[in-house]
Length: 396
Image 1 (spheres, rainbow, N blue to C red):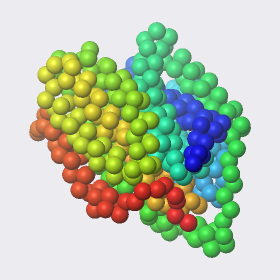
Image 2 (image 1 turned 180 degrees about the vertical axis):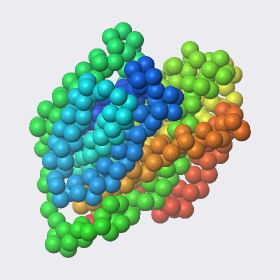
Image 3 (image 1 turned 90 degrees about the vertical axis):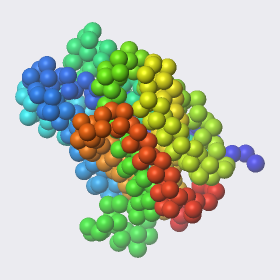
Image 4 (image 1 turned 60 degrees about the vertical axis):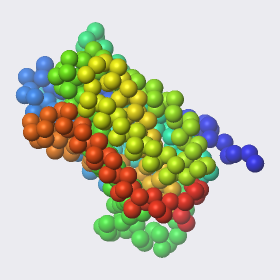
C-alpha cells in the first residue's frame, strides 16, 4: 500500500518559514548579550536578562495564541505572528537605551510565540497521520539546523560587519517567510456548536490541552537538563581547557540528528513511540555522563553525538506524541501546551542550575542531570509509555 505523500508544497513552505523563524531567534540570542554589554555597558545580569526576557514573552503569547488559533484561523494567526515579528525586528534599529532593548526583546518573544505556535499547528495539519513521527521529525530539523547555523553566523557577522547587519539579515529572512506564507494552503477547521461553546471563557482547558500534559511534564525536566548544556558548556569547556573543541559540540550534535532523523521518525510510525523514546532517554543520559567526565577533546564530541541522538530524538518524538494523543480540533492547543512546558524547562533551568554549580561544580552538575534524565524513563513509563499503542491517528 502506498504511503500518503509527506513532502508536499505546504510541508516544505511551513518548514522553511519555521527555519527562518528559529534561525533569527538563535542568531540574536547568541549575540544580544554582547550587544547590550557593548552598546549600553550592561552588567552581566542585565545582559542575561536581555536574552532571557524573550522566553517570558514567548510563554505568555503561547498561552493565548494556543487558545485562540482555531477561532482566529491558523493561517491568519501565522500572518499576525510574522507581521508582529517583522515590525518588532525593525525596532532594533532605533534602540536608544537598555530599557527599550528589554521591552523590544519581550515583544519579540511574544511575536515569536504567536508565529511558532502557528507554524507548529499548521505543519501538524499537513502531515499525514500515518507518517506523524517521520513528518514531525523532519519538520523539527528546521529548528535543529537553525540552532546549529544561527549562532555561528550571528557571531561571524557581528565580528566582520557589526550588530546592525544581523538585524538587516533577520529582517530580510522574516520578510521572505511572510511572503512564502501567502502560498500556503491551510485547511479550515470546522467546529460543532458544542466545541465552539467549550472554547469560550477562561477555563484551564481553553489554555492547555490536558491530554498533552503527561508528555509535556516530562519535557520540562528534559528541557531543564538540556539547558545545562546550552547555558554552561562554554564556561565548562574553559574550566577543562577545551574551548576550541567545544565550539564544534553543537555541529556534531546537529549532524547526529540529521543522520538519525530519517530512521527514528519511521520507527516512531511503524514500531511505536516507545521503540524510540526509551533509547532516547538512555542516549541523553550517556551523553551527559561522558560530558561530565570529559578530559580530552574527542570525549566532548562523542558526548555531542549522544546528546543529539537522545535530546534531538526526544524533542521531535514528544511533539508528535502531544499531537497524536489530542483531538484534531485541538492541535493548536496541544502544540502550544507542549512548547510552553518545554520553554519553561529551558527558561528556568539556567536560574535554578546556577545555584548548584558553586556547590557541586560543572562535572557534578552534568552527573546530576544524567540522573534526572534516567529517572525520566520511569516517569515516561507511568505517564505515557505503558499506555502507548502503535499508530498515529488523532483522537476524535
